[in-house]
Image (cartoon, rainbow, N blue to C red; front, side, top):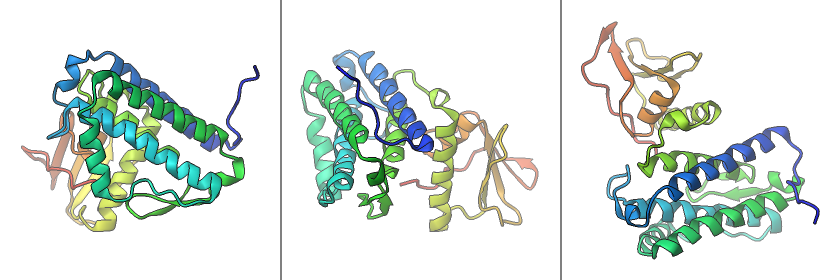
Length: 250
């Protein structure tokens, strides 16, 4: 049998697909390391067990696949009918048996990968709409999924850290988050830098900013609201005892 390959030949898109697939494999590995009983334990997300995280990532694959189907057929298929339906779906998924929960992740990931693989090259530019109401080209679905699998692999609280996430994914994620802050005006007075990079993000026009710095993994972890370990803050040249909380991301 002849192997089937992605129909796109765009090198940037193919690299993005590779990062999404690697992230899916990484999440799968961290999930498979957990026993069925471990699934009942807390995740790093307040109010969510590991079950909630797995359900969310599984149903997210189905939702992203609906957008890819939209791009393929031209028939509008939203991610979710509403945010309320999405939240209900996650709560329901968290009640599934361990084998059903694991199958949800596995089968939904395979389905999404097939939808990506079979999408004609020209259709990647077709417009779809995210659950937040943003109109984006179908190629954006790759990044949407990439950040989900890598970040939520950490949220399983099973030994994964932001150090495990590839630097290009971290850099894009940090730019996305700080861009969202800037658009909302919630980054006032905050200047963010990542050690060893030329990244300078946030309120770059501030005359006396609070400078938040750290390694790229540490500063991205902080920006996602997942801890301040490895992050330092200074103001007017002097260190601060406490690193300020990052503004809300989503």
